[in-house]
Image 1 (cartoon, rainbow over the protein chains, first blue to last red):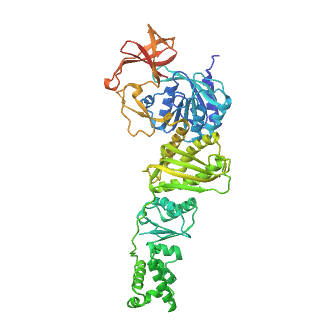
Image 2 (cartoon, rainbow over the protein chains, first blue to last red):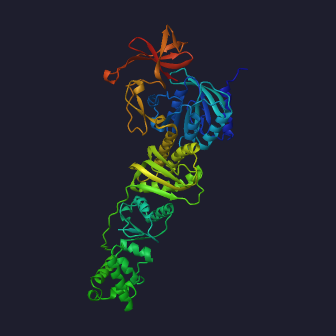
Image 3 (tube, rainbow over the protein chains, first blue to last red):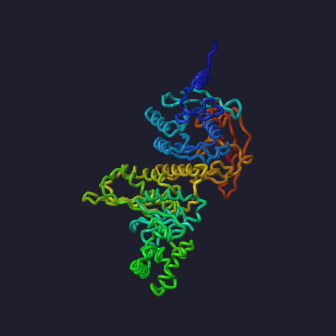
Length: 177
Length: 432
């Protein structure tokens, strides 16, 4: 019997859960990720095309107010604009070593529907705190990681690489709960 | 004309701040009579209903801790009489109303004395109501009461016919917006009770600013502490410069909390707070006077601006920002940090090729060898080179001459490299 890819199994599980009405978390839609992004939870994204995917996700969700924080700011906002995303709905921050307090503040404001940050948190306690904050703020926290790690507070994990065509993505779902 | 008279039991220092907050209803206010505020709302009929006005007014009374009798009528004197005596029926109004007819602003003691003597004289001959007074023939009034009697009659007649002849005195609000709250219970020593007491102070200050159509861009806060012998600093002061001007206490309180939390953790209050002083130091014009009826975009924007200011208070103004896009081929100059929204965006389509998502702060020197590229000493196989994009700027804007390429690599994000005028290759960004 041929092996079924893990992401297909996860997708089927998702479909069954949806049919049974068991999905409690609201999801933000994405044309390239059928399960969408959990609205009040943590999503970890890895891969060498992660920022491109995040930008395409924001293009598909034009109403989202976003807080984008980085340790040292290297994102090029011109790239956002060139890819059809309005930079006015973003607030950017250079957090340095104060990433966690800044994310906490941004989530507590309850203004941002989405927060993007680097995935530098290794402690479960910190991730749990972020998960609770994002649930309370009804905000989606996207963590951009070099490599996906095992951590139970993270709801969704996937890797994005460049697809066969220039503007397509190859997505490998690792975890979806 | 439609006038609201707010009649307070006693003249209070809170009347001026309340009147400033009432500027939201109408620019035509009168504070000449002690213990009363008159608001002309007739010209604002299309903006709000009288019921809405009264409801909003009651919120303001609560905010300023005041209580007043309110009456709406077609002239200043009628509104005053309605608020004071509860009726405009001339049969029920007594001769004691003459003072209000003759001197509604209580500014002329001579007129008041005359009104009182007219009322006394009439009482002696059994005339107790305004209606009975009007039955006295006009020709007999000058001989009995002098010119004041004739003036009184003519004013009552004009008022009842809806033709008021009382001129509206000019009132200009104070330049300075300052609020003070005195605390006597000695419970305010920690941050949370302090913020609890600070909220109504902010509410009052912002109501006054809102009435004038202003936003606060800078405020000062001072706490007066109980002067025990152990207290080294009996007055603590803070100055807040907001990244974006604030219009509500809801948006400002988290910013103040941010700073106070940090400062009071480092240096706690040494004794209970006796008074809170808040002064608005700088203001800017706020053009969003009226809220939109069908959507809450203003509220969302307000919350967004407040969040930006709050984050800037914690991180520093230069580290929290919005992006402003420029029509500029040199990538590092194609955007700048800004605080406010960008009203018009440049059209970059067909002019500037797609830029990388990540840009290095300083370009890094790389080596190329055949089909391999070496980044930080590590080699990657090149899959594809894009066509060249030449960027050459004028010497006056710090001359840049570069030839850019997008290179697709095996197992890695595409990179954005350029060849300098000295034939050296530099990594400048990633299409990550």
